[in-house]
Picture (cartoon, rainbow over the protein chains, first blue to last red):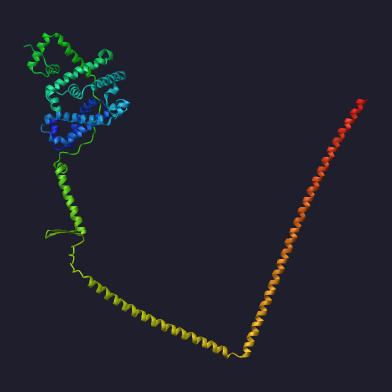
Length: 199
Length: 279
């Protein structure tokens, strides 16, 4: 069923439609949050808060067509709130101490990657971690825009709506974000040749 | 005027989201400035590297959210409804507690009166007494009290005197009866009574002496037995001591005898040795 129709049904209090909406968007919001924090626990926290806020305020959404940008607005706000909490508490998550998700996690068990070549999986994980570390070096504004554009596939208009700013501002942030990323990658000597990974 | 793409134009062109006019301008610009292709290639290279970061697998919770959108729930959850219900509940508690405690609130003549447990009674304003009236009241009360006390004392005194007289009468009657009995007894009766008293005393003395002599005999016998036992033990002890002394003397004698023999043997051996040397 189309997202717009689901949103309309969910706004009337249809629990099934609400559950379906969450199933559809949970993975996207989690991955957005994960790339924002590069931390599973904080990403889970922000994702759950995002969906709680979504269900609480869904009735107030006037245009179902803008659901995607509206949902990302909530997600960005939840991520920023979680970031403030992390800065205030100065705590370490388990992921920071023990590394990211292991092979014993439920997500791994459901993943198709467990059937891949272990060497290749390890290589991809290392590259992924390296690149996400680079992402964390961007400013928060640039990081949000880069993640929304590169990984969430949002259009400039949708990003501008989600962030409540102009399209030109979004493009400008992306311009400098990509430039900064290029410099970070060069500084860390992360290139196609050095990582031996076929891009 | 020469066209120079802005940051926004570059990004729109990179992501294919620019309008036709900007697209044409950008393409024209790149044809005229082939060195700017490198900038595009760098961004594309960065984007390709970023694409290597895949999605994390995550399991969406299967719980179904509550029906947040229902009108009744929203009504109950609105702050206005909650405030109104809170005020109503507070008033209800006040009314019930006022009913249970019998609280009355009256406002009349500019006075607010709050009473618990029923209608507040109006205090009676009384006229105050003068010092003289108070003194008269005290005196009257004291005189009445004195009269009652005096009457009670006189009554008690009469009862006490009557009781003493009655007791004294009873005692004197008993004494007179005893005196009459003694006076009526004859001389023979008195002698019989005295002789019987003597006999009883004699018997008591005899019994006492018998008992005393028997106990003394028993005590002396016990004493003799204990003394003989003591003597026997003393004798046996002395005998043991004598025996030990005799044994000791015998032992010493034997020892001296042996030593003497050894000395003599030594002297004999020395003497025989000298004779052999002389020869």
